Amino acid sequence: MIVLYNVLVIGLGEIGLPIFQMLKQSWKTKESWNIYGYDKDPTKTINKIDEIPKLITVMHICIPCAKEEIFRKIILGFVEQFKPRLLIIHSTVPPQTCIRLYNDTKPVTSLYLAHSPVRGTHTQMFDDIESYVKFVGGVDEKSSIMAVTHLSLAGFNCKIIGSSVESELAKLFETSYVATMIATSQEMHRISRHFGADFSKIMDIIIDTHKRRLDRPVFYPSVIGGHCLIPNIDLLNSVYDSSLFKWVQLSNEVRKIEITNQEIIDETSKCSEKFFEMRKWLKEKLGEEGKE
Image (cartoon, rainbow, N blue to C red; front, top):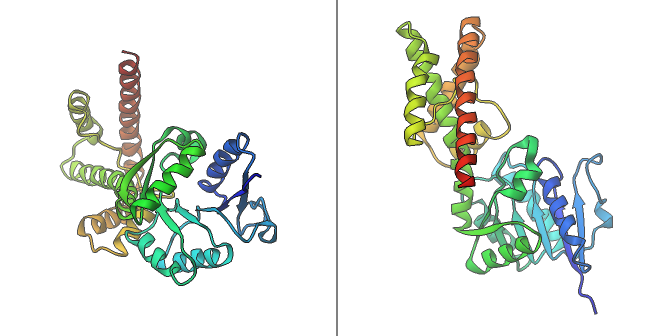
């Protein structure tokens, strides 16, 4: 007798859809796996809510978290409805969100819960999800093991990072660190302009040092945009009063005003050319070393 293994992905956006596709690929070799996908947007959803079994084995959460309390309330509603045995949160969330969510679910059902952040570029998320290590942090050791076992069966390259708090912070730090480097470049550009210096030329010496030591990349001083960098700093600052990350936010707001100046636009463009030349060099270097 085949025991059905019902898997549900909640949220089918830039993160959820590639995860659903990975699960669907693995399903082809696992007749007992039933894969369902739900999104509140009727143009994105694969299954209507009444088409999904009321008992789910594994539930994947891939919806954005803007405010932790609202996020936990939404997830708790899905847990009450589908009673998953294992809950995996792929969303970027503030630290300790998963442990608080786990405590929320105790009166409802007994489950395992783990956090597994997604890394990659939004324009090539499916390829990045396949190639990046999928780190996992459970609310306890058993949850970590259960999540890694499931994700490995689905074709993900997995590794336990520790607890869910470590995985939550790792995701926030990874993106916030990039934002900090961009904001640092913004400030170096301002200082250069104050002294009448060309920051794109100053970048040459920093980049040359970086090529030798690989420990001091310099970004171009643009406005920090995208879906992740500033929103993730906002999430972190919502639970921890960081003067550094507040400065990053402030620097970026100032840059939004500064970038209306055509001189700054032109200077930033020159700096971006240097940055992408450095990136091209680094990719070629890594490619050559990989062949050795």
